[in-house]
Length: 121
Length: 115
Image (cartoon, rainbow over all chains, first blue to last red):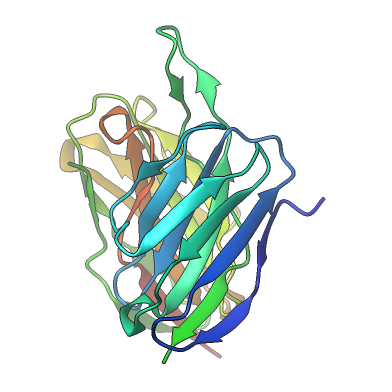
């Protein structure tokens, strides 16, 4: 059982280059997330997808785009990489459920991928 | 807005000592969830515990225990008789309705256990 799989695990880019981080989960989870981790700042949410077909900005979305390709896959794209985007990126997924008022929600418990270390020179 | 504060940046202990990690949170939600995650040197994030805001019972799991006090908005984590394998970064996190149940993380506490 692979859980959440991210690729690539390591990447070095030059300023201005573009790249896409891929993420796939095999747990049939509705919600998927992209976080970045920087020293002393914990994990900060970049974008999330509460369910297939929806995406929303998180805390630090500038410079990124996402695509929820299907229920399994959620990719993160850097269109023009900047040194400030040097970070470790984590993809995560969580179960979502439809509550009594018809909103998608969940407890927030996340299952994480192994992380992707990105360096922008 | 939700906020999680882990005041301790780094803690260093000798093996077999107890270590307590503090976590203080802010939220306007009446229902919320609190979490602890562990990140060992290998880098992956490991789920340790989830606590519902309605359940203030303390929990013990082996050498790990958690003290949830709603009155002080704290959810502290204690490792008893620490071992070298406990060396890791530990994150406290919070989710609630006001933030669409997305996790807000604290900055993390790095625990180093010396042999």
